[in-house]
Length: 269
Picture: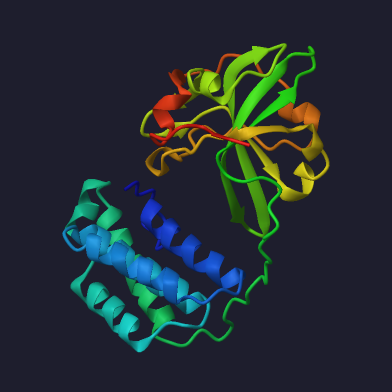
């Protein structure tokens, strides 16, 4: 877990907790499911006292922000704060522990009182009529007249937007090959970190050029490999999507697409 500083929301774990709660809250979804998941994270953090401190305080902070801090969670935070900043803060810098303790004291003064102005939901609406589905493979005409090929790695919502994330298959041709052939071609990726050279397109933008995508079928990606490595930017047009198609990607290796797939045969349409 990366820890960036002494603030309450200043680490990977803290941001994950806040983002998970706020996403459900802003989409007006029941919080029970995400809270159950966060409680599970808390149990996993019990062997690490600094993680327990970060988990408890960031969880309490987020629930206080939306005016839903329970008495039970408030008492958990109180116990952590009365115990004092974890000794591991000394390892970050000579004054990190003292600064963290000051942060905890100020934090307690704030959350020990009800939030007078709870943050309102942003009332986002999720897209339900997806244009494409995860794992679908497409051919798309490139500016030079050749076909390029891409697989849809993920579809997700963030801050009121629906994003489609495609990764390039490193093969071009005048003709459209079979899915079995494409399984043996390469993608830019780093094992354990995810696919590189990804193209992000919002639902609204993709609607404008979705007809350029020729669906070839599906190649199911293994869930433990459904990860996104390097961010390559948003594509607003077909030209954005097909630009730099054959360029090498810095600091990335190539692996066969089949290395990232479930061990099933290709599903053809």
